[in-house]
Image (cartoon, rainbow, N blue to C red; front, side):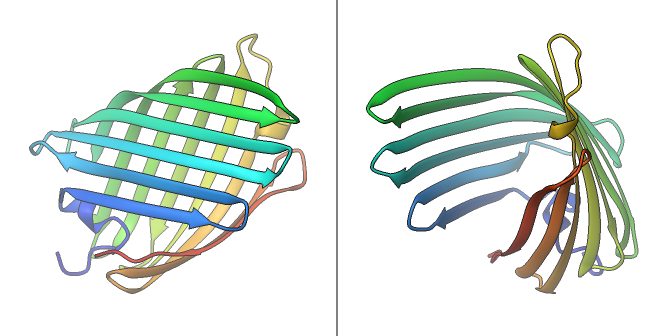
Length: 207
């Protein structure tokens, strides 16, 4: 629809989509495949599969597998709620020592989206539970169909309900879409206890 923000137009129009991503350098190869399927006006299914191979030296190598599946339900046109499950597996080899681990995580989420004439809010809230409780809030404001700014906050609490400030991260990102299929994103995140957590500069192509 004309005037809709390019970033979330497939979601607003309930358009089924598939994505493929790859990142690599001399030590890391990461592959990702995912999709979003709108069953009808009420139900939506999301899935994602990610594989990483980290080979940083002759003494260290890690292979990592991540898979998630969730289902969402539109309570109203603006509100979606849902839940799902995440599975992770890691296989490490360090100085000839081999170890592997896997973990299953439950996830519940809510999403509120209200866009009028190309501007408005898209707010995501989620909680993931295993040995840790992880809570994330992401609020993005669209100034027009091309430009948006988002602020996210991530906190983790262990199973004894002790918060770890070093794990609390606040991040600011901005997105600008030159065309409906070509954006650029920049951002920076910081630990609330002090110190830089992340720096992001990325682009992608949507077909």
